[in-house]
Image: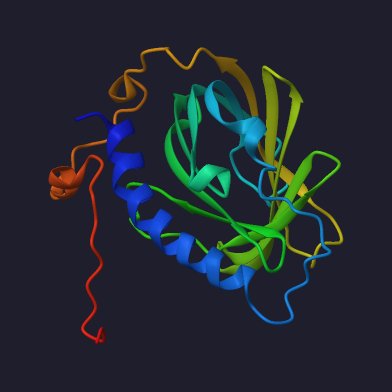
Length: 230
């Protein structure tokens, strides 16, 4: 079973159910502001398979100007008609080998997007990065710890052309007064029929238990039973 199926089948089922319930409840909530811009399809430009060239600042917030490059693949798939999407990124190069999963889901009440990230070596989702799109550019913020200090993190993504896109990550250790860009990704669209050998992208070691959910892959007819039901 390929990593691509592992990423999308295992997580998509769980989160599509959870987010579907959240969307339906929030859309009917009293006092919801329905006059705000509907941004549920802001990420539609990003769906597909992308050849990705990444440049990383190796030592952020130290005054370093040493950058290193990586090349890899990003696959973005929609869930729940695009209100949720999953992005899987794998690359290697002089900056090392990196695997990332990003879950992006729309909050219909706030009309904002929540982005969370995970890596195979950690196995938990990050602090949500929250924001929205304006004039075709999505900008999202969170606060987290870096080298023992609390910093602000900004993630930006935008389409340049139908076959080109870019994203950036930046850090601020002065409350947002100044920002240092430390990760730049340049995307070139590939054919969705491209056969991807995910295992050749990185050299991560096999970890015990990482295939435990393989029995669950596929499409299932589901009946939800509750102990609180009549």
